[in-house]
Image 1 (cartoon, one colour):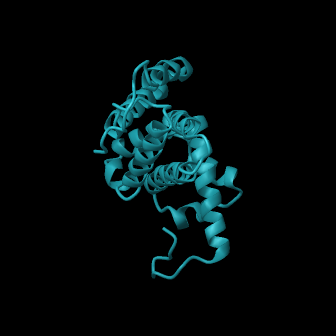
Image 2: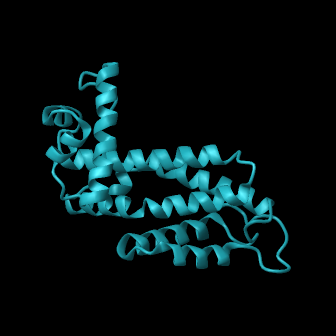
Length: 198
């Protein structure tokens, strides 16, 4: 929320504090899990606990905001990479970045589910942005010959979800990423246009 309960925009200092709380919460939850206290988040952000609760009245609202901020950031990074000079490196780099964020995203999503909050609703406006950005990165990488032409956004999303889940549970995603990337790269004789988006 970047407005007060009365609908007025937050002051600049309040926006800075909100951003500090979100960044600290992501760090704390990534390092200590979602059972970490909001007091620890406040300490790490350098603000009082009242500031945390002024912006996020419940721990669930803080977790939800962390998840939305993470997805917003990933969508923004993907949009920036859409004009990268090396489309293949941009695609595979983004894929690896998503997987590296998996444990935080998964922990936050699970904590929201335990609290009865549907993470899909919480991320409803951001999810499509991430999917569109993945589709753009994929299409550019395919046109550059870095990714097989018969792979579509749905397959990439499924791979991202599966590998992210595994990385969030077991870690050690480097070998899994290498295998997945080998499967996504063109085989001898692969040519043609990217698979249709869908």
